[in-house]
Length: 114
Image (cartoon, rainbow, N blue to C red):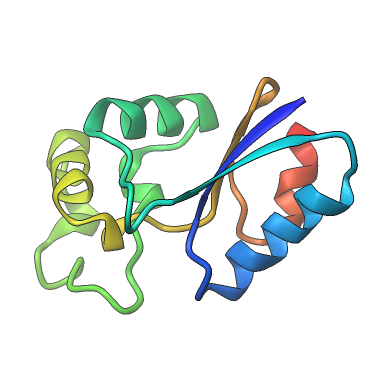
């Protein structure tokens, strides 16, 4: 199985999800440090669609100016545009496997797609 994790090494939840992937065994893991290599707008839209969630549900509120910018109540296109322009607005970790996508908060949600 292949898994892609959009990862921030400074985030404890992201590190825990990556460890779950490593401990699972036979998984080809692609680690993308999304602050350095942000996913494009279309990729973000696909990830949230495949996760069954709206872009606003994947918005990082803590440590960002998302609230001040009115993003929690904004439409999906506005949120995706903001995330594509400022990847710090993306809540992490997002993990994609052939079984689906999950925002792994808590990290144990990862088990749903392994």
